[in-house]
Image 1 (cartoon, one colour):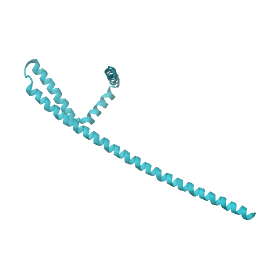
Image 2: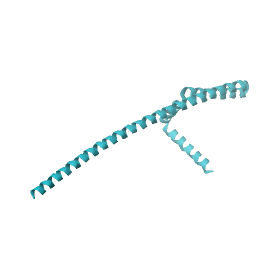
Image 3: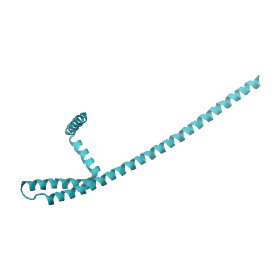
Image 4: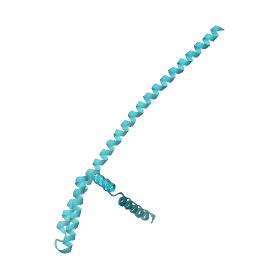
Length: 145
């Protein structure tokens, strides 16, 4: 009987050690999986950041191109419009406005314009909210038809 009790005790101890080894292996595997997940998340975050920077740069380049075109249009308006009288003043005003908007786009780009808009909203939150509500109403009416 003692041999059987001893065998049961040894068998229990072996099972306990095996369970401990399995638990250790599971912990190690979980640690490896967690490390791999962190690495993958970091890689995805880096790629998303790169993509965002590329998109911003592309948008800024496009805005610069549009700004240059606007300056060219302003010059055309100045040259081909009337130069005297009330129409001459209106032509000059339109051309100057288009030219300054083109210059702003060329220099600031989309990111600069977005920063300026953000600062404007921060300085004037109530009017910004009212403008947003107004735009929302206009969009709702336009899509209702």
